[in-house]
Image (cartoon, rainbow, N blue to C red; front, side, top):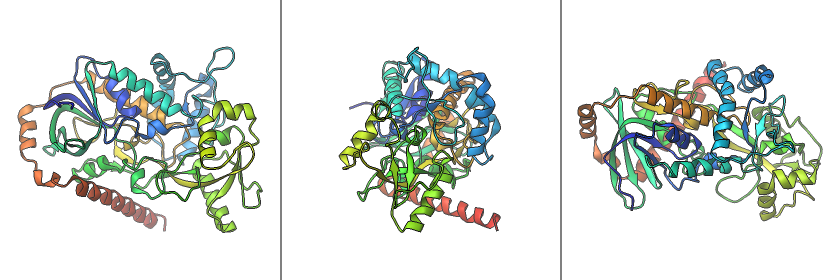
Length: 442
């Protein structure tokens, strides 16, 4: 059993790429605790199939910028988009330094693929398991750092705050049932998305937006909580649980969408929200629960080398992608809203940062461009760590101890009930934001 200390320099909530990259970039002399609700592989980062964007050459900057803004319906924060694109080459270099094996051309240069909404290929990838490739290498690097402790099965139930600053978290150990009150100089929320609050989602069920609800409770600013992306193509199934994603890259490499009569009905390479709308309209027109995706236009060798995981999963479900079409349906996939953070990851509460899918820095606008998620998470997590390093100052322990002493411990007596309340709070906030948006559009 891992023994947790009372105080850490930095606490990171979440072990996806955002949490891990933040931890790896904190000064090595600082103690860092990384917690996660389940095992570290239960993150959306681990599931990412398609790839991660990289500016291939300076001449592509404006095109990449325009593609991101267009996909986001021009509601993006231009400063965040600029920072992401200009930092993309450094991010990929960092990952290669950790041992990430991206696909290469015959001459050894990085191979790029194309996805919906992109005007040219600019996406680095590792087969159809890019997220797993990146996450496992970051995890391996983090486990080698003596200053980083990664602890699974620990759930954040609250933050410790005096209403002005954050001094750590309240957490529950899922294995021994112990309630922890952990103090820190800085806290970083990297707890992922909100797919667990939806019936149909590509996300792991443990991702229920707890950090979002906690911030709502404590007056930490949250933006665009109703900006929720639906992925156009998940494998249709009547089984309960997480929906299996059919990567955007499949359509980028030539797969086509077909109606019930196996006729093509849309341009598959438009942004995700537009393709999703086209699929839903076709399903309604046809009176079906899904449409067909045909991967046979893609060369067999390309399918085998680029999409082995998808091929195998479809086979497990009874579909041979080399001989037949597969049924696909839209499902909740990504959260563009979240805890408000700036381009350095800082929230509206001092000593509290938010990075990755749990935050909203405006980089995605109203709709995320494919394969910008891993890049955004990694880049701004590193920036958050650098901001902590550059301005590091110990928290006032007298204030921290007073804030801890003021906690109402009865609130945490029934963690499962509390988490259900958080889930309800998130859903209620989404509904309120949608109703407000509807009034504005009248």
